[in-house]
Image (cartoon, rainbow over all chains, first blue to last red; front, side, top):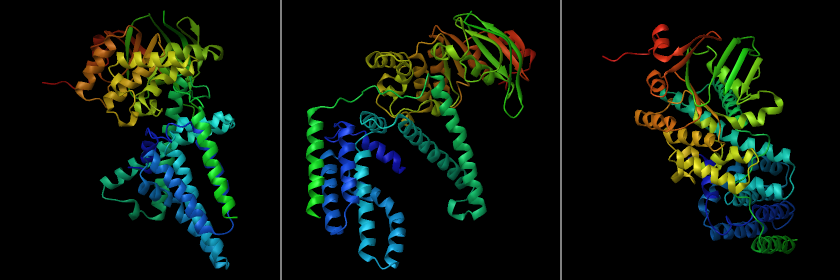
Length: 236
Length: 231
C-alpha cells in the first residue's frame, strides 16, 4: 500500500485526537515545530522528550506507533545528506541536531496528517485565515499527487508485465519513462479538473461537516502548546 | 427543447477542426445515442453543451444560451458523466463526492447532504456513503459518478461511454438505473445493444459533422456500425 493511502486511512480514524478541531491540532503542531527548530543544546534529550510527547498523543488516539516511526524515517535520507556535510565541516553536534530535529519534526507533522483528513486540514487552515490561494494549491497538489502515484504504478506494472523493472532501466530510458509519467499525469489532471468544473467548481471546495471549535479543542490547544513551550524552556 | 445548437464550429489549439457546422436539437425527456468513429467529434460536441469547450455558433440548453454569464446555471442543468469514473470522483468519501455539486452551487450543507443521500439511494449506493471512492468496483464507481450528477438535479444527462470497464451484470444494472431516470439523456457510445436498450433514436457523427439523425437501427445498418454479430 502506498504511504499516502496508509496515512489517509489513519486520518479516517475516530480516536480522541481525530475528533478535535483541526485548527487546535495545527496550532499545537506549529508551536511544537517552532520549539523543535529553535533547539540549540541537549539535542538528543530534548528531541527524545518531544518524540515521547508525540508518541503519547499518537497512542492515545490509536495510531500505530511503529508505523508512525517508520513513516517519519522517510525524511532521514535527506537529513543525513545535509548532516554529513555539516559533520565534515567539523560540527558533529550540529549534524546530530539536524538529524534528530528533522526526524521528530516529521513525526509531529505525521501526528497532524494522521489524525486529520486533508479536507478537514484545509478547513482548519481556513479557520486560521490561511490565504485561499495557498489552500487551493494544497488541495490540487494533494489530489494530483495521488494521480501521479497511480500513473507511476500503472507504468511500473506495464513494464513488469513485459519482464522489466524500474531498476533495470538505463538512465536514458528512466528519463523517457519519467517524461511519459508526467505527460500521462498531466492528461489525468486535466480530466479531473474538467470533471470538477463540469460540476460547478469555481475555486472553493466546501465540506459537508465544517468543524465547530469547542471548549475541549481550546483546552487541548492551550494544554499541549504549554507542554511544548515548557519542554523548550527546560532545555534552554 | 432541452438542447438547440446552430452551426457549431470548433478548432483545437493544434488546428484540428473538430466540429464543422453542427445543427442539433433534442426534446426534454428524450434519449439519443451518439455514434461515430473515434475522433469524429461526439465528445467534443458534448463538452460544448455545458460550456467546457467554447466554439463558434449558437447553443441553447434548457432555454439558456451557453455564455459566460450563464455557465454556473448551465452546469447545474447539464450533468456530464465521464468515461473513466476515476477522473470524476475526487473527494475523500462517496458522500462528500456526491455532495460536491450541490455545495459548489451554494446549497446549504444540510440540504446538500440530503440531496447527496437521496441521489445515492436512487443509484443503490447509499450503503457505501462512508467509503473512499477508490475502494469501489468499476460498476459502483459509475453509479456513484451518476449519483454525483443526479444530486445536482440536472435536466440533461450526458454519458460518455457509460459501459466502459463494466462487466455484463454492471451493464444491466446501469441500463435499469438509466431507464428509470426521467431526464433527457445523450449516450456517447460504441455499445449498440446498450444504446438500443435505452432508445431508438441516434445521431451519427462523421469528421466533425452530423452525417445522419434518426432511427437507431436504420443508422446502424446504413453505416454498418454493428461491432460484431454472434452466431
